[in-house]
Length: 401
Ligand SMILES: Nc1nc2c(c(=O)[nH]1)N[C@H]1C(S)=C(S)[C@@H](COP(=O)(O)OP(=O)(O)OC[C@H]3O[C@@H](n4cnc5c(N)ncnc54)[C@H](O)[C@@H]3O)O[C@H]1N2
Ligand code: MOO
Image 1 (cartoon, protein in one colour):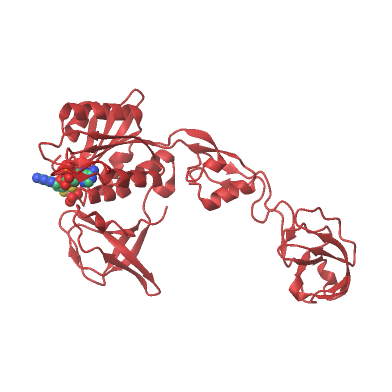
Image 2 (image 1 turned 45 degrees about the vertical axis):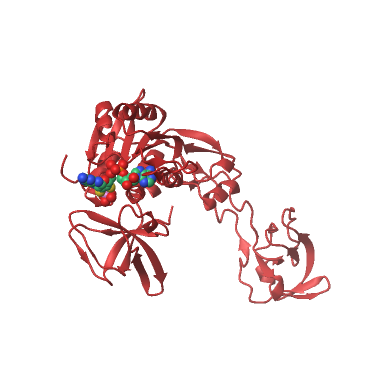
């Protein structure tokens, strides 16, 4: 296992045998961000009846241009009687169009004389008429399985009066930090110690990717304790993530513990940052938990999360939108050369009328977390390449779903 594996091989190993988790019923009002486990069919027409798009007067368009008596007043929410022939109806936005009317003149365009109004003669048939079922027709597929419920999707469900949906169970994740030097914020910092920046960063990303962090623990740099905690984590979670302890140092116990307990699928990738990333499986009572060992350097964890944790959550949630990051082309404002490893550089993007410029953070070292703060994208620089300012580069967009 001394060769460096490409990203594609790692993704294939990671996603092998991974399928969507079970569905569970949930109140729609609590389903923000969840992923639909099945198609949702429309049971209602939206709008449910022809209605007016404007405040104005409903009429038959053959009567446009004539003085017409106002025979009824239709507010939104009130029933409409059929329109008396040769008359018009005062109507308000959202009001039901009466039978016999086929268009609405907006009130700014009519002349009013007491109880009579004259509409413009050029009123097109169907003007300002919002037809029944124009937005959604009863019986059509409203939302497809795999849709992540966002603001518009939740509004769409509510438009159908749907109060319960079946969503995928959130993947349960255990997040273990290794390293005797790592201390939690709130505790005093001793000599040689640093605060745990990986845990809150990864927890935030995992939440965003639809997972539920069910266990957080610190693992001491000690072989037996590492094995014990990995066993416990695999029993509690679908995915076990460790940070640190996957490199070649004597205190790097994680890889050996995974080999002893389960199976290591792959170790060491041809990427920068994130080279010592490890992938494997840990047995548990039912099936196996997936294991991802992220390198300890916070930038390696950040990049590894976007490249690997996101698609893994996408597979467990059956959500295609999480499977891969959107790619865009930008002009580099930087120069760089790469060696054997594909480089994921943290960049901010200037999106202007002349296109997109990718601005690289000055220090791209994997220990420099400030290079991730404000990063809009990862510029994906292939191995053995040279980039000059102005060259087009591929970027993976981080600001989307
Ligand atoms: N002789 C070699 N040394 C190293 C190699 C190598 O190939 N040969 N690879 C380097 C690379 S690349 C990386 S990346 C790191 C990753 O090593 P580990 O995954 O074993 O991580 P640690 O050694 O435990 O930690 C690395 C670094 O990150 C800090 N860290 C760890 N956890 C946290 C945390 N939760 N919050 C903030 N910072 C954390 C830790 O203190 C270290 O500074 O190995 C290189 N070495
Ligand atoms: O590959 Mo390491 O992740 O450079 O820091």
